Length: 160
Image (cartoon, rainbow, N blue to C red):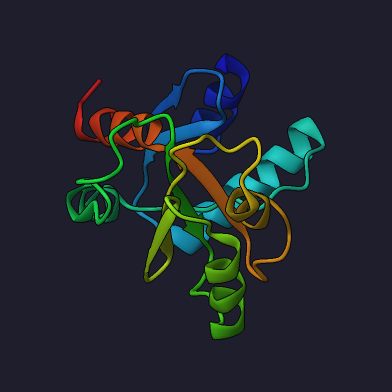
């Protein structure tokens, strides 16, 4: 993702690093999350033609997300343990739909703007994953597996 990194460096962000080829970026800025997200969205749209929603979490927020780990005692495979990052908290009717979609032993926990989901049989046939990956949440969202989440925290915690 060298082009993305260069684009964001050119926009004045510091310590810009990308994680694999995933579109995940760690950077530093003196601006707040909303301003950083809008600036990234605008530059990505202008340069690459993608009209996407960028979700931003500060390093301290990411650290709290990892520390919280509400399903850590049951979610033993980090590739099947997901965190869905939400633009805002979910409506109660959406939560009820997710409760219906989650079939045991699948589980999920919502804490503020994050939804932790354990998919022990994988996501391919998961009704819960279909809900999380679709547009039915009513808010912008993006999911990352636990390995990616913890690696992003490590990247955000390191210095160049």
